[in-house]
Length: 209
Length: 209
Image: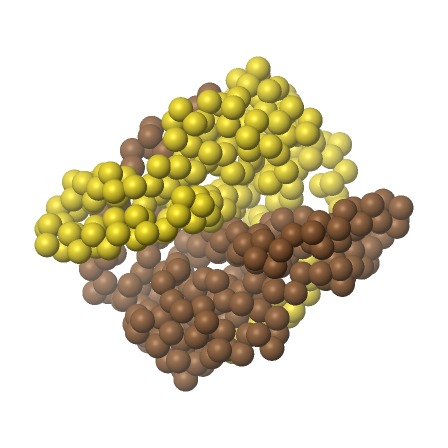
C-alpha cells in the first residue's frame, strides 16, 4: 500500500484482538521511531513507557474509564513528559551534543546560556505545557509509523493522568503521563473498522497561497 | 529504505536547494496526510496553509527572524488552529458525521450535547491550547510522512505568530498560526545533513513495564 492508503487504513481501534502480540522487531521500530522524534531545541523532554504486563494493563484500564483497549491491546504506550527541566537538564543535553558531535565549547556555550536562562524564566506550568506539545508531536509520529508498519493503534486523551502516574510511580522518575496509545491488531469484529472516515473536505482543510 | 532508516535520514533541514520544487503528486500526499491526521474528538480544529508564492515567502521570512529556509524551501507549511470553537462548530461536525455515516440522531445527540457543553465551559485560552496540541500531532504526522516520501522538512517554533497571522490575514478566517514547516529538498552543501544525530540512549528514552 502507498502512504495515503496506509493512512486511510489507520483508524482509532476500539476492539483489539487480544490473541495477537506485536513481534519484537516491530516493537523495536516503534522504540527507535520514538527516540528519533523531532523535539523543541532537541531537548527530548519526553519518555515512552511500554506496558505489556497484564496486571499493570488491568490497573491502567481502571484509570482509563474501563476502556477495553487497555487490556485487549498487545501493548499500551504511555507518553510521558519530564517534569524537572532545569539548568542541569540543559547541561546534560549539551554534554550529549559535545559527545556526539565534538562541537567546540565556544559554539555551544551561548546556546546553552540562552536555554538555561529561558527555562529559569518560565513557570513550571509553562514548562509542562511546552513538553506536552512535544509528546503530541511524538504521538503524531508514532501513529504514522504504526500505520506504515500496519500496527493498529488508538490515540487516547481520555484517561486520568493522576491515577496513571500513581500506578506507574511516575513522580519518582520526574515524569507525568500525558497521552495513552494502546497498540496491537484490530479484532475482526470491530465495527469501527468498517465505518466511513469522517473528514472535512480537503479544500476546506488545506489552503494554498 | 526501511522506516527506521528513513527516520534517521530525516533531519531539521537548514539549507534547502531553491531550484528543487516538490512535484504535485507528492504535495497531494502531504495534503491528504494532513486531513487524515487523528484529532481530539475527531473535530479537526486545525488548518494547513501551503505557501509557494515567492513574495509571501519573503514576508514570512521576516516574521521568522530571516531564516533562509522560508525562501529557499519549495513550500512553507503553516499549521493553523481554528479560533472559533463553539456550539455551531460542534454542530457542523455532527452534520458531517451524519452525512458520512448516517448515524441515527439518538446516538449522536448525547455526544453532541456533551461536546457543546464542554466547549462552553472552558476558556478561550484552554480551547486554543487544546487545538494547538492537535497541530503538534499533525506536524508529527507530516514530518514522518515527509521522511517516508523523502521530502526534506524543517519543523519550526521560532517565528512570530502575530506577524505571520497579519501577513496571511488569518484572523479574517478565524485562524491563528502555531507552527511552520518549510519543505523541499536539502542543498548538497548543508553541513547539518552530515552531523551525527544527537539523541539520548534508547534505554533511557523508552522504558518497558
